[in-house]
Image (cartoon, rainbow, N blue to C red; front, side, top):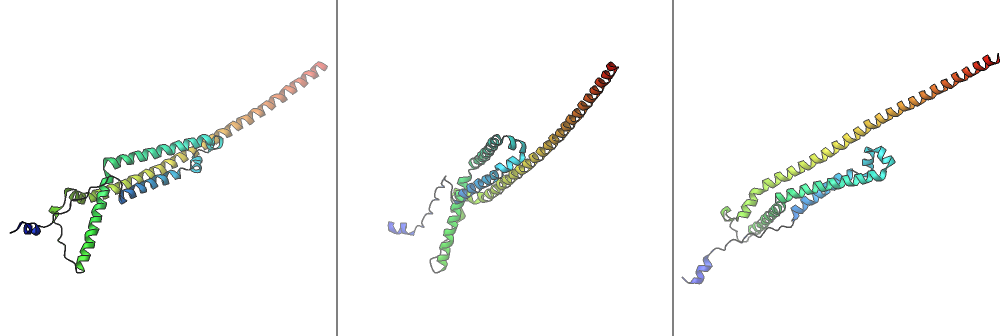
Length: 221
């Protein structure tokens, strides 16, 4: 048999899987956008008005200092959240994993479109045998549940952090109210002491005046 016919009878070799990019794809970009929005939304709750309501005395007498403290507090929270999130993204290789998931989904969509075209009268495409898949494709197929679990866990952690911040703010507000009540009570005590001192001082003056008058009477007699 001629050599050309041998080459013509061979089945085409499967195309190698395209490399997975390191830059964020649609899902990775969506995850980063959601996290950024959650951070901004949480920090917006710590506005100048809300922060001042927790420290009314400082807000009344030194609002500039309180605003500096608020800005520093927000910056520290923002840096801590983003640093922890970036570390998780890097340690778990989340961007490449989500990009691989995007690639698998796009490949599935292309195969679905090809199958629909074949069902309309085109040649039937032979299904891809699992053993012919590349290691990266098999790995990503098993990685999907893990990625979904990690995404759910990150959402739970973010919600827990937001709830902890709300509880912390409530505790601070309650403590400030207790301190204000204590200061108000002390002010009332001081006011009562000052009033008592004034009354005692008036009695001493009256007694001294009476003694002087009696002495004048005795000297006159």
